Length: 154
Image (cartoon, rainbow, N blue to C red; front, side, top):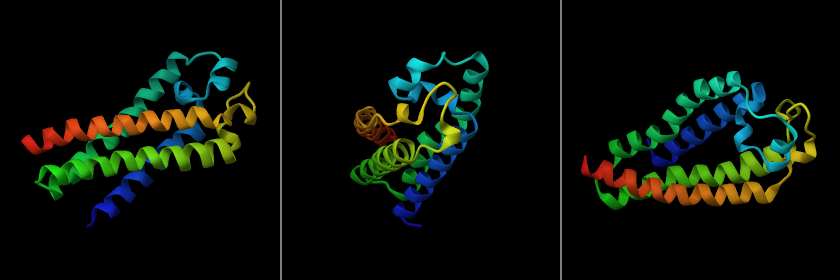
């Protein structure tokens, strides 16, 4: 299978996981909500923190290790490894910012994602999501280089 196919699997898997958890328990993502939302509601409860860990561990495993596993199986030259890991992580950062955050979260804002005590307008802070996306791209570069070097050396 091609790298593009694996990246699509990666994007779809992460997107479904994130949005199902957002629709079922939006408050577990409170730390990633725009400032207007966080200002209107109390912090996470211990139960919400626990649910974030329960759901976050599998999400984190897929997020960090799927690109490594696929890259290690497909490539053995350093530049291919670095480009592959960057394609996964930068691809997700761009997808997350443009589609998940700006289009769905800010644009559509499905009603089940709206936390009690907030309004649909509180989720429309596009600059917050663009800044988060820029940070995600920087993290993608760092992750790609560090993990790429590890994959290459192992």
